[in-house]
Amino acid sequence: MTVPADLPRLSDQTLGAIRAGVTRPTYDRARMKLGIVHLGLGAFVRAHVATYVEDVLAQEFAHWGIAGVSLKRPDQRDKLAPQNALYTALQRDGDGATARIVGCVKKSLVAPEDPEYLLAMMTDRAARIVSLTITEKGYCHDPATGRLDEHHPDIVHDLANHGTPRTAVGLIVEALERRRVAGFPPFTVLCCDNLPHNGRLVRDLVVDFAALRETGLATWIEAHGAFPSTMVDRIVPATTDADIAAVATATGLYDAAPVVHEPFRQWVVEDTFIDGERPAFERVGVELVGDVAPFEEMKLRMLNGAHSSLAYLGYLAGYETIADTVGDAVFARFVARLWADEIVPVVKAPAGVDLNAYAGQLLARFANKAIRHRTWQIAMDGSQKLPQRLLFTIRERLAAGLPIPCLALAVAAWIRYVSGVDEKGAAIDVRDPMAAQLRDRIEGAGPDAAARARAVLQVEAIFGTDLPREPAFIGAVEAAARLLADKGARGAAATLAAG
Ligand code: CS2
Image (cartoon, rainbow, N blue to C red; front, side):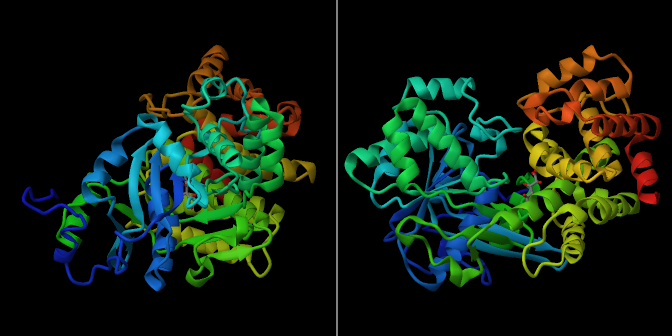
């Protein structure tokens, strides 16, 4: 399927020509001022955060336009700018697809092209929220401890060059400093990444970085800043050419940057915005709570923990997507056992939530064949994801003397994956900031699967200082690595699913 060459491009001017039935902004985009600066303009924010803001604007006009910022590459801006930052959100499930044009992203920019312009925007009194989806590695922290990695080259750069920051933390601190000098209140920093206690984590990173610049700045941020934690959830795979063609068919316009998402979405947010200034999220289904921690823990450990486990095992078994993986009854049984036997018993359920029912709902979402979420995409950056997705659950089980066969198999599958060679001997394109270091360790350990596992489990930036010294953990992952080497990913999952 390709896009016809003469199809008009989506833009403010062509919106009127869109197919009937496609929802589009009815408010006056030209009049709407910016209220949110969003760092990390990937598909996720456009299919999640922006759809909630769009719902608020559909009810009542307000100045909550979003400036979407890419921190590194110009690709998104290059696609969005010619279409006035408008884009299509295509919701898909078994029953078909529904297209909607989202208008609340007013601008898209690339930070390194003009950091001064971006900093001026963040310093403007009208910017009341700076939100973030920069992925786990974007925080430049130590994944095991959550503390700022002061030796990270970009952090070193930003500490020496205040006016041209490369990192989100550097940008936020410089903008907050300029607001302090101007006598403005800070903006609310709204982290929307899958990290534990994400608000507190960013607050600690920002305060640590500020303290390295000047104690007074750190004290001001601690006293006046707001960093609500959030739990974000919607499955949004990377957009493909086939998606672009499907959107063109659905809307009658060419959109170079649509997003495709599942029907489900959830956003749980701590309501601690500075001066209460935020979009009227309570009207559009956002859950505003005093403590996000139980929701975050449930989601990170159950959804993301299972996602990562299935991504490594499924990839090794030759499956391209999560839906294909759980379409195989062996993996459906394996993940059901992982949840029921190993994760649910140690997760504290948020009030009123039945974790077994939640697991059932997750399996149905994973099985949505209309969403082609690649195992390879989820497998990315495992060194940054494993701690909050799997290792906290493992620690709690070990502390209670409980076995971890399925969790250990997931860790072993990750180790096999980062070795860079799959079960058929083909190369794996491993994307991870620690890829080279992990591969060196594996190759240095020789061919034995258990020895390779032992070598990787010593990495303290991932496993902390406790797990490398925990015989029950090392033993379980070694056993899983042997099982994986003997039986392959599918055979190993079948053995555990039957057990
Ligand atoms: C996924 C998440 O890519 C990944 O690592 O596990 O992006 C997942 O799809 C979302 O967190 C769902 O809310």
